[in-house]
Amino acid sequence: MEVNFSDKLKSLREKYFPGESLRTVGDKIKPNSNFFTYLSKIEAGLATPSKKFLYEIKAKYGLTEEEFEDLITSYLAVEIKKEWPEMKDKEKMMGELFRKIKNNKISGNED
Figure: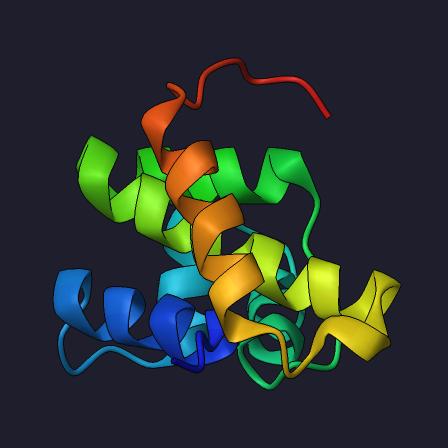
């Protein structure tokens, strides 16, 4: 089971802003900025988002709690694989960790 944060983020953007460009969505999230470039880099897997970014996406996209938890879970998969590359083939172990994480309520809005 490969969890791809970048693809999940892109699919959520396409779900909530169908047919809209990254630039348009970026302007809706942070008007008069180049937020779309940051969003583009994250969707391409070239940048790591902050917790603040994840909460902005939750609010601006209007994600359900389940969608947000799935997004966080896929984000954590990327982070775990970065920190522990030797675990990349340990999908069962990661699956157990994700189930534990999902069973805890994800809350707060701090960085």
